[in-house]
Image (tube, rainbow, N blue to C red; front, side, top):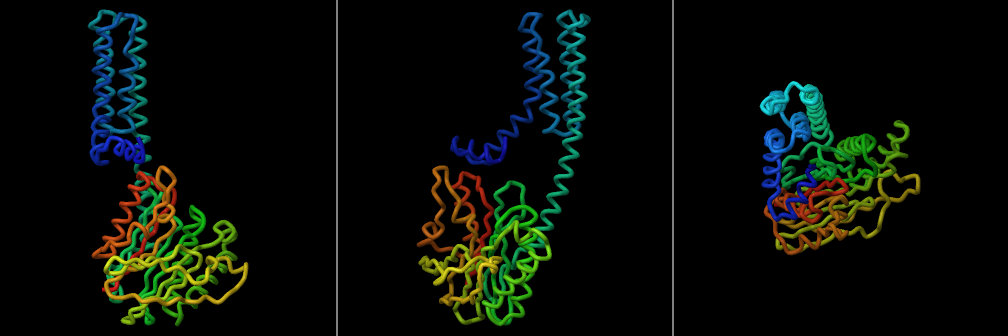
Length: 374
């Protein structure tokens, strides 16, 4: 049973997911023993022409992919002994049918041990791959410090695919002489091409954030970096197409925020009293990587950012998350009138509400970044 199916069972039963998972694991762990006992009872309770071999062969096959090698061997031996003893006790252990059935159970027992070793080897390889993926995520999307340049920061990445660690969503925070600068974006596409584009955008942002005097110039550097990488890495630009992004600049001590939006969902500004504003751009702009369609000057839009307020940046994995009826998750409606003590608390609440809204399964990755002015 997959994790998503487990969540659906938990919802329909009205029980916590952890309780359902615990019960499923318990059932799976005792199922081989139950099958062996059922086979013994079946052989005793039915006429001689009926056979319990399916029960005895199913037990080790179920144990093989789900249990340790020791448990699989013990289950296989128990099934083999049970099949032989039942035939012996009933007085027909030496006939051809009984010998055939015993050999069948023995063959399946050996196969179960082999399957167990293959699965364990695959698990080790998967664990290694997960460790590599985690290292790649920490390298490409390092978790920002909780406090940068006097601002409280929190970031969160929720992958739509279970077991995935990194995709096409990105974020980065940089403290510079011009203030704390932030980027959050979404690369069009999936797979390694999207990850490569994420690395290009973040690398260009960290360099440009330190060197460029204006936020508009930072956006243009990102544009050029994507165009340059698309030329160097054949197919990257064609495959991924573009990157929506929003850049923010928080000058030290000025109580304002400057924003450049390149085709991305608008940030939300949540005041200390729960009042919420959606920071829609005055003029729509094309995403990064679409400079071949035309050039125009980026214009940073400035708004007040008072003490105690929080700025929330998010990808469309949040705003386009759907429930079972197809209704979108509306972060502005959900957050209006609410107060959160820290950015981490805000992001944790949003992630939990999205999971409940979608029933535990989303179709797109979700990146969240919140900044609070103390």
